[in-house]
Image 1 (spheres, rainbow, N blue to C red):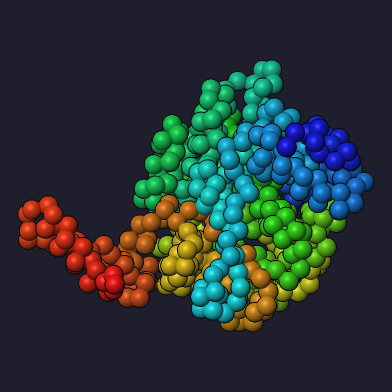
Image 2 (cartoon, rainbow, N blue to C red):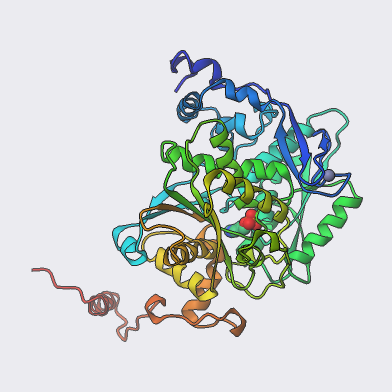
Length: 488
Ligand SMILES: *Cc1c(COP(=O)(O)O)cnc(C)c1O
Ligand SMILES: [Zn+2]
């Protein structure tokens, strides 16, 4: 729709101009730092940083109903910069001019309802929100769209040379970083550090295809993270890990979309998210809190984090019911099919603790919980979902397994409608499905295939050579295999 065709009260706000007054705020010591420099930890105390809009109270000059109307109308606007996560421009990074925003088709991913037979198998109604339908096939694109748009903005300033964007990754961060950096062309080069042998062939192919320097480190993700931090401490690089507060801002869009998808009524809903480095779950909590602050939503949904027993430091922390006795301890991870969440020492843990406190204070005890699931449950849940028309990856399977666990513990009520995060596309993690079908899991995964979920192609043989006879023979075999009834 053309701008002049929108209602008169919407028109002046439709295409936003830069406004906010953003700064980095240290979570530990409270210090404030300017955003002209690319920081990812506090130079004073090394604490985690959040982005804060010091002028955010200006947004409260409008009631929640105004923002709801504006965001709904903006959906009809055909301006690329406002078609992705920056539809919620004022809430994400209102200091970036529209001309610097990169849009590669991220965000506004479909929310697909479970059909009746899946609902009855699971015992409750739910949706999958398919974040695998982002351009690099995972939710990481949401954060990269914000982080690289800001880098693009900085790159346009005088005296800024070519930048090197660098990240450590369990696979999807690097695919997203490399894609967005490739779009920026000469302004930004990218290098990604991956744990050797711990990402899928698809995830390795993605940054290679985007032209990034791909460096493999013997070890696991937590080792890559240490190397990247040493680089960021000592050299001029832009760090694109989830410590990067611009990424967290971009990932808040997931919460905004869920709210908008339910016409801003999220009371009695539960949002289920797999947890690795905990960037995503903190962004989602922060996103709902921001909507609540502005009166855009009236109630907060429940948030359920899910971890595998093979990588469960956040679950363990909250397993201690007495708040005063909780101590965070990193764990050594074991083989996990939810490989993108296979992290023993999540960098965002201080953010998790702070946000869970605030969320619980506002929404009540039990509004945030973390559940644990087995590798077997993850695989079985993924296959169950996909046999009912979904495209869940292994982490998406983890979400469903976690939802089932929360239901059976009574932590989520049967009449709560859940939205499960399918964080990546099924095809990125297809090797795990193959291992299940072939019963080829190494023992450390602890997965035994259930015959009812296994599937394989059948090769049909034919003795005949003449083409017509071959066709008739094969059709006959297939009809018998599929028990087809002949035409009357
Ligand atoms: C990164 C990732 C996760 C984990 O998200 P965190 O923000 O690290 O907690 C889960 N699933 C997929 C597919 C991912 O790429
Ligand atoms: Zn500090």
